[in-house]
Image (cartoon, rainbow, N blue to C red; front, side):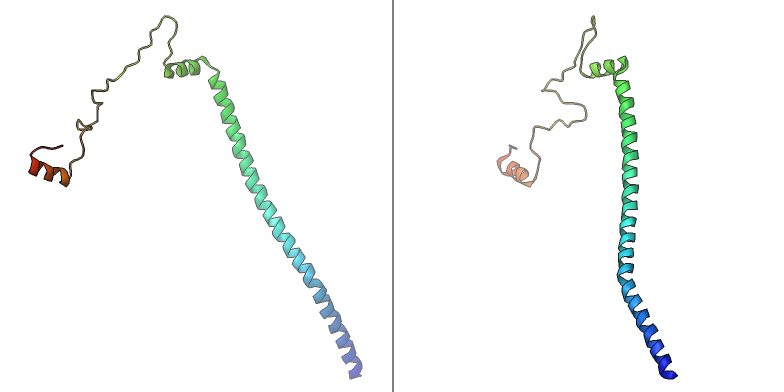
Length: 128
């Protein structure tokens, strides 16, 4: 009897090993499909965020377009372009080149003082 049980055990073991070997490629394919599915879900979320951003940007541009069609915007743009209404005189202040602007030092045309110029002044009694 023991030989019959031994044969049945080997027969069942062979089937189990065969099933395990057949299941390995299926498990690998299943794992690969899960990875692809996970990547697709991440891409979908990223693209949805990009779509939401572009929709909000389009809405902002539509609002700016509506504002650009108003008289207030046109007048502000014309003022920056130094245009004048009929009957007005556009005055553009011009700063002469020989005067200094506020906040600038008065020695902008002179070279910076360093040791070479100081030694030059010591030996030749005059700064270049």
